[in-house]
Image (cartoon, rainbow, N blue to C red; front, side, top):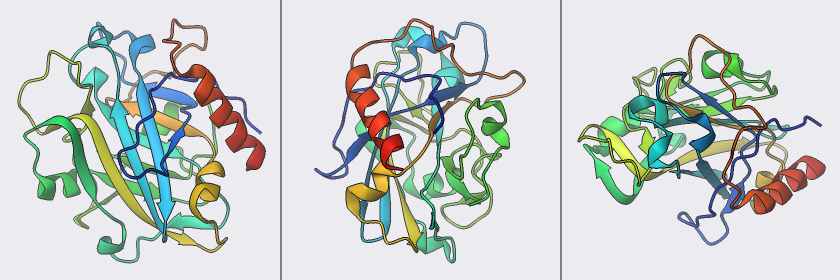
Length: 248
């Protein structure tokens, strides 16, 4: 059982279904840059699982004062699927979809977004790209709009492109019209489920979860556990994280 370095506050959301579970984030990996206050980066992640489809909802709750531009753009998620569960990448259409949800989108094009977001899955573990700067280990699955992290684009064209269609906070004031998403993005993955997990049971057995902002590079960039963090929701997410680890 690994000890989480950082637990970020988040507000539960129920976009995909009433049975979605708010998943605790164990560490944030971010792009260093002038003006960034990493303690104000605040991702929210919820998941639901039904009929082999894992639905992941990403919401950016970061404060406007966290920083500007790509530094505060929510670009990816990594996690550890339970034993016997992998992403079904036999054909692109089996993997799923990328959908914008929330108060507004900027330059959103669903066809382009399918090629901008990608996934990577390896049961032996993943460590490259943003995860080269992780302090926790055991990540075997990720979804991302950064090419080094999203090896397989959702539309089957190859690598994800860049940071297009990453998620800005709805409160971010410095965003100009570009291919971004404001507030919330939903992604679906089709899973091979040899272990027979169902519903909440699969979500409760997902291991370490990392939220990725910008395009991490250069320096190990994980927030200090003693940094000034928003406290709202920490108790709720702490219980969730402990439950997932005890049940795994």
